[in-house]
Every structure is written in C-alpha cells, then in structure tokens.
Length: 110
Image (cartoon, rainbow, N blue to C red):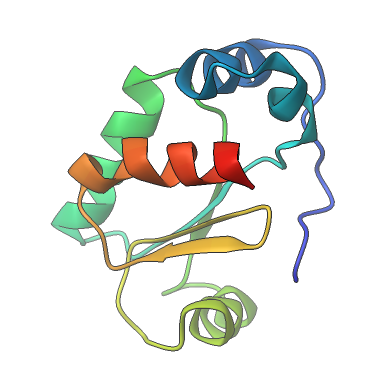
C-alpha cells in the first residue's frame, strides 16, 4: 500500500470528505488524493473540475512532464491511461467524473 506523505489536517478537505462520506472520523484519516493527469486529456479536465467544484484538495501530477509520476501512475494502475486518482491505497484508473462519488464512498468503507 502506498501512502502520500501529505496527511490532511483540519480544513476544507476534511469537511468535504466528511460530508461525502458522512463520517468525520474517517475524514481525518484520508490522505490527500493524488490525481495523475495528462494536460491535453479531456477526462482529466473533467476530473479536475469535479474535484474543484466539490472543494476537494488534491495533488495534481502531470505525467507528461514528470517521468517519476508517470512510472508511479503505471505502477499503481497497471496501465498508461489518465486520469488516475489514488487515495489511501485505493486507485481509480481511466475514469469519468460520474465515478468519483462512488470512489469516495469506497474510501468510507475502508
């Protein structure tokens, strides 16, 4: 399991995740999501918009300009398509924004 070094402290992210998950204790345990993107990817822009619209803070990694980020994305997801979202060891690969609420619900269940 891979964990981001940035643990979410009190703030907007925790409140939004708590609202999405209906579990304030879990929100404090959720690691800031990492979003692996390609700059010219339409699905990536939709994912960014969804996360921004829901005030979810995340780390954005451009896999076109960062070889280490690309290698990490492939290692996590087993494929080269973007976007890829990772949080708490859970990975959502090559997705559309309609899949994001379910991903955060899956985090709720652990």
